[in-house]
Image 1 (cartoon, rainbow, N blue to C red):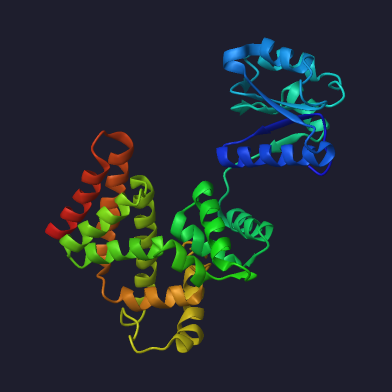
Image 2 (image 1 turned 45 degrees about the vertical axis):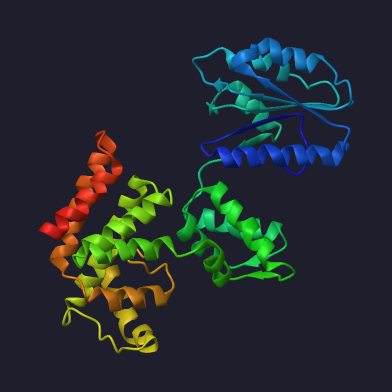
Length: 348
């Protein structure tokens, strides 16, 4: 999207990224026309093709150049919308006129979609995850003139999840906090955003396993009050328990625990290589084994894992699978479902 074309098609499953792509397109067009650019919006559901036709045919009263943004419609092979719009995009739009379409759904096999792609105007905005999300966060800091490492991005993801709006808000907060400083650190993020989601999830697992119902319910309430998704929490809890099970199985090759006095340096040289070999031989991915995390994260989990009984971890995992089924398929209150997990573990 280096040079303006006259027609754009912006779509995808992430509403935030679609809005950002629309903003960037308009900013690109402003570099060509400056303030002599009017922005008009057409709601297809309300105005139909007539509204689009009217906007394209009508010059702006205040500017020579105009962007028409068409929203709330779908481009599918079963509807006539694509063929209707195609009448106005088959040839070049009038000089100074631009059309930006933000449909809810797109069939890229349609002739209209292929035509816009041929002009270089297709922008697909799909959900970011993994390394793609990390890169995106680092780029957001870079756009604000700040450098941030992938570790900073991972910390932010751990704290805020993959909600791009929430992450963007925290990026702005961190940039403001940094002032004239050029670098954002993980300590900056932890100070501004709060405790790690992973730490709080582990705290909940620990309190459940150690049969501390009052403390476990308090942690659960804090997480739900912080607007954590119940289904998302079950997923994170299952991930945490699975991580501890893998570590436990590794430790069972020895005496079942890690020496609490073992220093971090010796852990990296003596334990970590053997753990890597164990998980590789077992066909466990580096992500599942948490080998994609910083070594100190694993070091702390190894030291804490000795306090847990493997049977309890497996029992909790079974209960979490049941909780996930209830959350997806029943109308039972999410809080009640999760409280049942805690009560069931404590009473067993």
